Image (cartoon, rainbow, N blue to C red):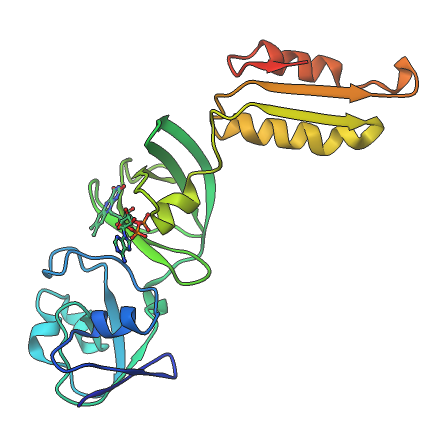
Amino acid sequence: MAAVTYDGAACPASPGESVRETLLRNGVPISNCCRADACQACLLRASAGTLPEQSQQGLKETLARQGYFLSCLCRPEGDLTIEPPGGLDMPATIASLERLSPTVLRARIRPTKDFAYRPGQFITLRRDDGLARSYSLANLPDEETLELHIRRAPRGRMSGWLFPGKPEQPLLLVGTGTGLAPVAGICKDAISHGHTGTIHIFHGALNPEGLYLQDELSSLARSPSKCNL
Ligand SMILES: Cc1cc2nc3c(=O)[nH]c(=O)nc-3n(C[C@H](O)[C@H](O)[C@H](O)COP(=O)(O)OP(=O)(O)OC[C@H]3O[C@@H](n4cnc5c(N)ncnc54)[C@H](O)[C@@H]3O)c2cc1C
């Protein structure tokens, strides 16, 4: 039976299974994929071992030569040492999350450097802990951020993580003195993430001079976000 090693750890393989199935069964959170060579979301790189020809079908010659392969199509015939797909990764941050509907979120992702892509192409979003999911790009290549439309999958790990909290839940925020600082931060964060429930803020002080930020918070209260003071 073929021995599969991923990122230095042995992942026992069962007869006939694909590398993707082996890794998932051993708790390696690799990307969801089409399982049919169309999306290439499950791309990995082998640093040792022989890859079945089928596992590199449709890949660019440059990637195939570096040992990249599609883990969903790879049923290893001998031992295989696999590296995480970091060589093609690019660090990025979440610039904003905005609800387009109760079940669809617009995520804007800011990559650390420019990269060329075509409208309609997809990228694979990889969280710090390795969880990876693919999403189609909704914007034009000349924009600073990448726009993704993400549907909330029931109990989905990536989409559930990106959908913050319960937007319809009323919020009651209370602070005294400069304890208003975290209250204001939470309020603005909730509004910027598309919170739809009512937000009540109570600010207390020993005397009227201790009350501050009233204009700023009043303007939030006049916004369509239903923030009440
Ligand atoms: C090329 C490509 C492009 C894509 N583009 C988009 C896009 O533009 N927008 C988009 O929203 N999605 C897109 N997807 C899908 C996306 O990658 C994710 O699959 C999707 O967001 C769900 O991921 P998740 O981590 O939230 O859910 P997961 O955690 O993967 O779960 C998915 C569903 O399966 C269920 N589930 C998980 N494990 C089990 C189990 N053991 N038993 C029973 N049920 C289980 C969960 O409850 C959930 O409902 C694309 C996928 C591909 C391959």
